[in-house]
Image (cartoon, rainbow over all chains, first blue to last red; front, side, top):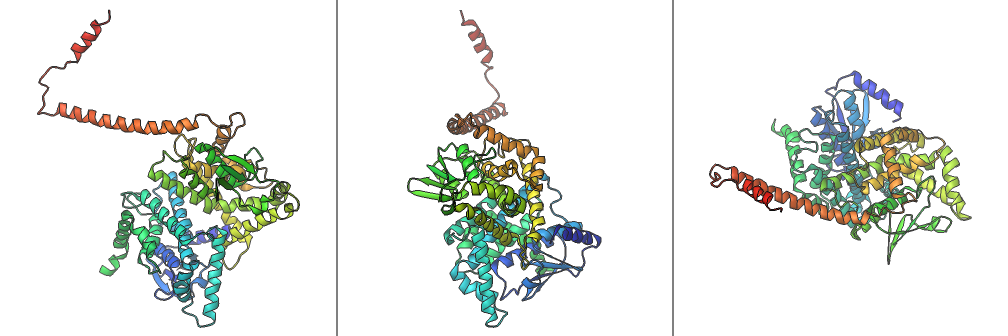
Length: 260
Length: 303
């Protein structure tokens, strides 16, 4: 969105409170959704639950095409549609709900830096493993991505998406990396997150912030998704404080639904 | 060790961000490298710059080069704690995601800057006929990188993303300014790899004579960041002092310092334990304090 449109949306957002009918759209959970999209969607869901904002999750096969930026997930609130975590955080801030108000400038700089670390390393690694690794792409990504469509559209869409992602990987310099190097990068990223988290319950001590939601989304999805090899999940499991962090957020924000 | 990189201008040892990062890191870590600029050679087209040649191995790209130098024991991050190392990774990611697209746009995509500054500079430093090939190639790579990473499908037009990448870059510069505060470097009193990365990204934007750049004017308002760049240039790249002589000594002293700190901590602990033991109720001092008598003895010895 251009800056003027963003400012307009913020103003409209500030006018109304959060409605009960807010919905979050993502691809079909059982058959279609892929690792990276599932991670992003879970991060947004965790963030909204941390803010205490109710949202219904709706699965649609064409969610990617409905989204204004082409990225999953997006939320439909009132008469506005916002996609991706950062714009959603700004949108909820305009409505008066924010998790990072208590941070000072240096802490906010740190939080944004770590969010970019997750986006730069973890998300890119997920995309690489899904689409640039031939085994995973052939066995999991292409079949799942094209499952709602019939032949020959399924083939065309799957290969188009793979081509797009490979172009992007080449542009950011990940095209020449091997799978082992990618796993090594993920391991270093997890080490950095683990050292930053230390023994605290959340990244900025007592209160969760959008960084916690983002890290939870990615780590939880990697731990619970079946891929061709378990090496990615093993990298994360070697950091026990990250595992307990995921478990804690899952228990606090996601399991009360099943008990009530 | 030989380092191939783009040459310098505008008061900088190199105008190319990645080359500048590596040059700064070699100075900070005290690594002796011979700098061979690729200007006016065919390597402007064929080589990936920067490139570090050491014996048989050739390493490209700033992060692998920094890792390679660390393995060769040229480590500027020696004194950082684990958490500061994690912060380094995070801030480098911030620079890559938020600042790099805007820098690429300012130098290579913005029509006025490209026509008046970037293309003439790179064309003048490339041999004929490469001066027709090298600048457009870089410009295309820059444009495709911006569109692929920041462009919103399906409208891959540069005008849509311009506003966003510049506001992201300004925010990134502000965040760096908050983090730097009033210090000389990001972590304490000696520069680390993060300082090298920030210097490599920010210095060309600061020093280049760009005809039109709101981002440059924004940067010039951030006094501590500009002071940071000037300080590094004066200390490490000034032609009067080719290399700070105390650098190698400093790393050895750092080891000694750490050891001394550990020993001091241990002796402090032992002193505390001793005090606790003395002041505990079961061990009332059953002999008078011998110190006054020692002092009186000492005062009597000098003739």
